[in-house]
Structures are given as structure tokens and as C-alpha cells.
Image (tube, rainbow, N blue to C red; front, side, top):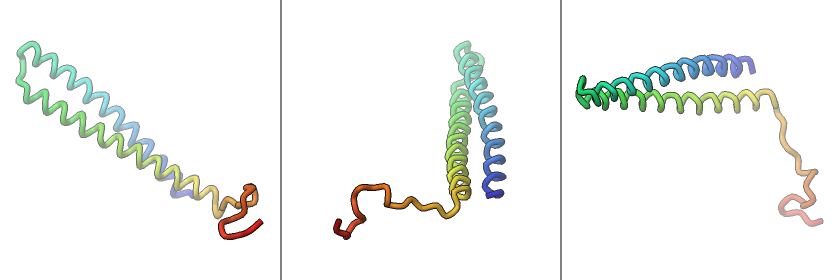
Length: 98
């Protein structure tokens, strides 16, 4: 359980860094598009800025998925060996008569 908490904490910090990087890459793309519109740069720079932003967005999504997986592992560790029982249901388990 302690390992799951540590992993989640590290992943949360990594996700925060990626969020900042995505914000900065978005600003760079906006500035590059503006410079292109004014004729100060060529379109290749815009494409490179878009690719950088998309790569960071992919990393961000992957990090979010990983955080969810870590949380699931944490919840499982907290739950221990809990298994839902079938006594709350009105139907008998498969293969048994009432």
C-alpha cells in the first residue's frame, strides 16, 4: 500500500510538470502562428511547434492513464482481500435451484 501511495505521488508531480509544459507549448504554437501570419517565419516552424505540442499532449494523456492505474492499485491494496458476496441478490448462483 505504501508503494502505491508513493507511485501516485510521483505520478501526480509528473502530471503537474507535463501540464505546465503543455501550457508553454501552446503559447509557443500561438506565437509561432502569429509570426507566420506576419511573414516573420516559415510554416515549417509552425508544424514543428504543433508536433511538439501534440507529443506533450500524448505524454499528458498517458500520464493521466498511468495515474488512474496507480489509483486502482491503491484502492485494491486498501480493500485487501475483499470479495463481494452473492447473498444480497435475490437470484441463486448459477447452477443452483431455489
